[in-house]
Length: 313
Ligand code: A2P
Image (cartoon, rainbow, N blue to C red; front, side, top):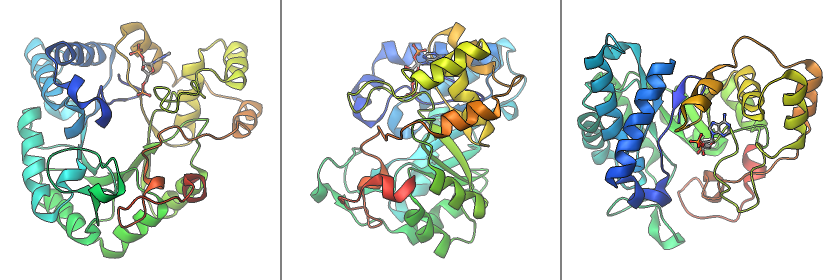
């Protein structure tokens, strides 16, 4: 699960059913406890992952066991699901999240996708399912969450520069963070430059290349370029990918259920890539794997045929 300081939910929208199973619940709770034990302090979850409850239980247990002295030692992020992307549903949704987490506040609350659906929680599987997203109304409600102290900071996820334009045009509190798919094989250069200019911090999900979402293997863990660098530095490919992301000033969000890999993923702070390594990584062919990403939607939340590469990278 966790990464260079963060963990994220076990499942994505497509695996919602699995998230509800008692086995996944217990495995998630144990992974969080293991992560706390090895030193992780940033946990990333979302209403739709179904991991808020096990995360909350793990934190409560860590506090009982003395692994943590107080909740304030943690940085907890959660996200508003597409079905709650309606102005009047934002605050109730955050309150549900806080109940699940057994917490009084989240450190960061994100709009999960620039996509809106009516009805029960789901991701729109066809164009007709999506309804226009009220950027202004939803962002105002997000700002209210921060003003009430229920979220220390607010931000977005899977937003392109065009979606960010829409939010910034109406924001009195600008988004603190944009969490997006980002790794050496999908470097998001244009989006990062845009965010840097506007003081929006970027966080990377799938920094190790994701779960073979496009069926074409893992562009990060299978990368020959990264393997050569890893061999030369005496590191693993995962560590090279995480170190590269960290060096870009981007927060890594990676998960592992394996305690050894959890530890490994933290061991990226006391060494550096060389200039030559960075140059080689900058030349890795770019491939986006999360095909449901915001590049497939127009700013209105509708499906579009726009090539995501034009929007983000
Ligand atoms: P595991 O839990 O078996 O360690 P995501 O991109 O969705 O965050 O998923 C990260 C994936 O990478 C998980 O399947 C996780 O599997 C795996 N992983 C995490 N850390 C490492 C590592 N250091 N080396 C190889 N695979 C890793």
